[in-house]
Structures are given as C-alpha cells and as structure tokens.
Length: 328
Image (cartoon, rainbow, N blue to C red; front, side, top):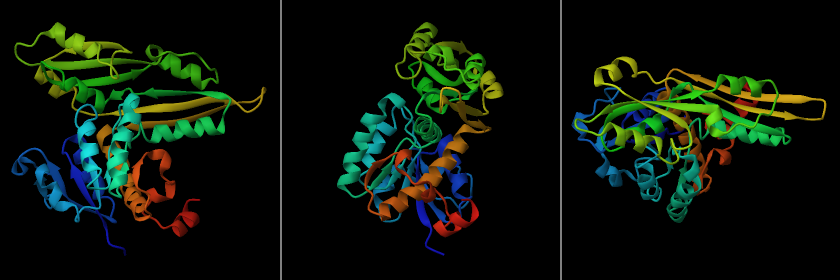
C-alpha cells in the first residue's frame, strides 16, 4: 500500500469535527492533527488519538501535511485564511459565497501558483456537487432551464453570517424551498422564477444582553449576498429554546434541468440530496477532494481549482483499473 495522504484540519467547529470523522472512514488518509485558534488543551476531538495544535504552529508542519482542509466560515475566515495559506500548503475549502467566488479564486490562485501548490476552492454540495450537476444539465440539454432549490434545512454559511452580526449571541438560519415551484419545474415546464419565488429564509436568533432587536433584524434582512434578495423572517428566542429545538443540522436540495431534445420530446434531469447532517456530508466531500488535490499537485497541476477541474476518478481511493472493472 502507498503511503497515506497526510491531512491537517484548520478550524474545529461542526465542519472540522465532520472532517475528523470522515478521515477515519478513509484508510488511505492519515490525520496529522487539528489546528485551532483556541487553546489546544480546551479542544475535545472526536477520537482520543487526534492531536491538537494551535493555529500559530502551522508553519512548522509544511513538510508534514500533504493537504490542509480549511474549515472556517466563508464570511470572514476564508477570505483571509485562503490566500494566506495557499502559498504554504495544498488546501481544500468550502467557500460558498457564490457571488464572490471569482474574486476569491483569484486571491488564492496567485499564491498557490507562485509556490507550486494546489488550492481546491468552493468544494461541498453547493457550490460543488450541485455545480457539477448544473454543468451536466446545461451541456446535455442545451435547450432548457436549470433550477436549484435548497432545503428545507439549516444553512451553515448563513447561520455563521447571522452569528457575526453585532448584538447576536447565537443563531441559526433555515432555507425553505417552495414546493409549488419545485412541482412546476418537475412537470417539464420552464417557469420564470425569481429569487423570492423559490425560497424563503427563517432565522432564529438569541440576542446578547442589551442588544437592539430592531437593529439586529435590519442588519440581517439587508445583508448582501445572504439575505437581502430573499423574504427573510427573524425570530428572537432564548438560549434554552435554541438548544432544545435547533441543534440538529439537516439539509438537502435539488438541481433540476428541464429541457427539450426536439420540439416533441421534453426531458427532465434531477439530482437530489437529503441529509441528516449538513456539516458531516460537506466534510465527506472535502475529504474526497483532498485526495484529488494531492494527486493533482503530484501531477504538477498548480494554482486554484474548482470542482469543474477535477476528473471524477481522482476522488476515489480505487485505482483506475478497479473503477473500470467495478463501477463503469
């Protein structure tokens, strides 16, 4: 057996814990350790043999980590960490602010290319798996329309954005798709659907003591890239209710392409996910793409990459010969 691919985890929230668990399900990968901004002795990993280091120690591990998986948030963490670390490590992240992917790509591409590193950005299920299925839909049914629906589920990125609003102590956000809109698309029709026609967003927020509820609500509902384009409801609750009713992290969604191959024949392509744990599934995707990231770096494919740049076979622990024999 070849030497295992050595993985580091940068950041240890829900996503970082999911990555730790996912690595344990992949025998060809080896977890070097967790890197955290907290005091390492205060972190309790999922497995007793997992090492924990401070983020400041990362420089000492450049020759000991093959791929660093960044598990920070897209709003504030990754825009700083991605460019800073892409010149030191091969990295994989889940940057998911769709409107800012081009500028984030450019900010990571320059240091990665200059230092012969591979930086896999915006990996997850959307962007990521859903992106690939949108591409398939457009390529296979050029005469058609693509529709993406998220939820019902808890969004990690939007929840993180809420928690960073001044005056918010804790909070979560749920994305709720329109069932009427989904059924219209599944029927083969091509409805014209605006952003507000497809989804609503519901937020549950615990305020810090003395915080202005109206100011917090306005900051959330007007937040660009996250809430401003949606019908958003903000509900204020106490910590006990948050702990009791909002700790699970389900999610899911659909990518549907409705089109015609001729005037007489309509076709519908649908890809769907139903997830008990959004962060654990996202983590499983990051871990598979870490394997591909390492292999692409070995093939001297440097710079920033997205899911569009990765041949599917590179995600698998199996050899090309096995893949052709077993699942082709």
